[in-house]
Amino acid sequence: MLQERDVDVFGLDRFKPNDPQRSYTLPGNLYYDANVYRAEQEAVFRRSWNYVCHESQLAEPGSYTTTRIGDQNIAIVRGRDGVIRGFHNVCSHRAHQLLTGEGKTRMIVCPYHAWTYELDGKLRSNAILDTIEDFKTEEFCLKPVLVESFLGLVWVNLDMKATSLAQQSGNFNQEVRSFVQDPETLVFAGRLTFEIKANWKNVVENFQECYHCPPAHPALVELFDHGIYRTKNYGICSSHIAPAREDNSAFKFDASKTGNKLMYAAWYLWPNVTFNVFPGRRNMSLMHIMPTGPETTYEHWDFFLEDRSPNEEEVAAMEYIKDVLQPEDIGLVESVQRGLHSTVYSQGRLVIDKDLTSNSEHGIHHFQTMYYNAMTADPRR
Image 1 (cartoon, rainbow, N blue to C red):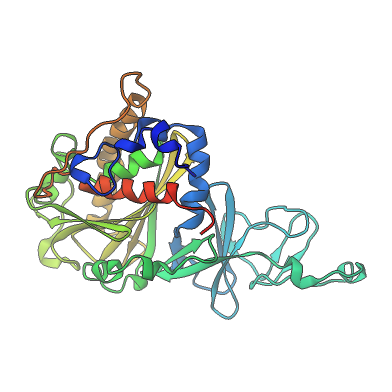
Image 2 (cartoon, rainbow, N blue to C red):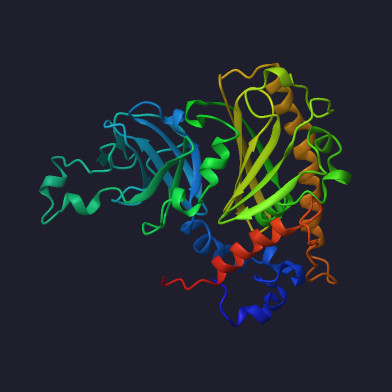
């Protein structure tokens, strides 16, 4: 956590949570300092809801997947009763990792000494354990994490006292559903993976504004009306919505057959996930921004469609993201990351106009305020 004394040390006194028009950006060293990165793991990621997968990827009892939240390895399993549960992916005996990757299993068996757990995390006794004096099986069950199904997706939170994602995100659920009906019935149809040489906050902030879109994304500003594009902040979310245009050079789609509104709709959800709904057949995609170090980020872009096989328009959209949009954005954030090490740079000024137009950076200020609040919160709460 950043303590009160750090406000001046890191230059946070010039960041104005309650006065965006006069606020400087967060100080540059917060984007590469190793101590700050370690503090983020506790203050941000272990206290927030983290995206895992679509519910359809855990469709059958025994289906499982694993994920990492900072240095914590988590296993998510659908039980025989149909309930999806999450556990710290570590054996209660000698801390060996239990599951790897994704798959299906009848029970959870440790590869080290074959300690065996039911799909609900309960340790099964055996002849050897029965010989141990005063051994309490219930003491060595798998340690749980919170799990929530939200918009057809599976989320986990390491903070067992956390309020639900549905409650934290307010009207986010209803707004997304107004652009893509029944996201629960979509299926996983593909993943793009990118390794980025930049701090995760740079990646989020790049998403949170379209001031850079006209010079950096010429095809994207043909896909939607940049003049009408607006960013709106609420709770732990931001929305980025504008009418879409069929005549564009990003990818082609038949506007007469679109299953979604003829709109480009995107959202940011604290701390590290973006949602996207493109014009065309009913679809939803997520960009999961996962920090791997102070200056490195691993990014998954997951696509959820009506069928597991994308149609021609959806293939074109995926190829545009893979070959054009992401390379453009990755080049930008990696350049910023290098520039943050300049001896003459400490903080910039956020560009926020009074009408909050498409060139305004109030979305960045919203993210930075949430980050500031998380990093300065009392850890004893």
